[in-house]
Amino acid sequence: MRLRLLTLAVAIAAGLGLVAPTSPASASTGGTPDGDTHPNVALIAFYDAEGRFRCSATLISPTVLVTAAHCTSGTLGKTLVTFESVLAEAPPSPLPVAADVTAGYTSEELAAAGYLSGTAHTHPQYSDFTDLDNWNDVGVIVLDEPVTDIAPAPLAELGAADAITQPRKTIFTAVGYGTEVRQAESGPQKPTPQSYPLIRRYVEMPGQKITPQVIQTNGNEKDPFGTGGTCFGDSGGSLWLDGKVVGVTSYGYTSNCRYIDGYQRIDIPVVADWLAPFLAS
Image (tube, rainbow, N blue to C red):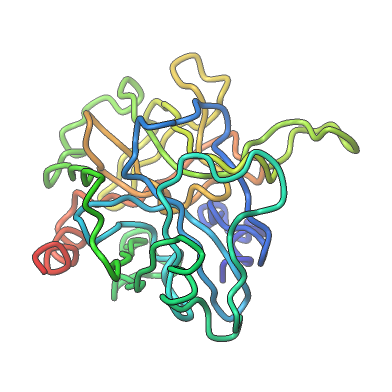
């Protein structure tokens, strides 16, 4: 499913944040290196039946990170979690290879490599990019051990996005570890997603449209009111409104990540009700 999303088979279902197996990517299109601006946004890596992938996620309690459902569905074994803002400026990737790639990571091997570990859970009504009215592209990672030195991100109140009457005049901030779109050092000079540096960035974007399930933004770095957009690797990363997380990165319309970006709303009852038991435990 993850690789199929990259074919843009349907206009709305361009899966952001997904890279080929064992091929980690880097940072958002345009934007600013994050440093410690959003220390609660993490990179996650995991295996499924097709190989290894990575996404972004956000700590919302000492033991829970919220991400996209397509970053949790079908996960084998444990999910790797790291809050390092800079993982690699250039190859090779620091992410470990699982001892048994058919079973995924174990908590023991991730701890030995210096990473946190957690268990992936997917919203039971996730539509797998088939139903915009019931999108539910949200998942969580429940950590094996709590994080005590990073403050969790606050969640937006229910219906926060519904109060927006002029989306195009509203600026959202997206945070993640997505690929940077630029000219390669050699070969074809058309800007394309590049694999390094592997860092956390944030971008600012004007809104484009708000539906009961989805927030869309204009992710073109040339937009006079924005600084960039999300791209491969940003999936599951957080969308912020007035200092609170209102959504997670879900999809994009183009393969060069310079047009409309889509975010699963988490300020809606079908998501908030599902998250509540995880946050209460």
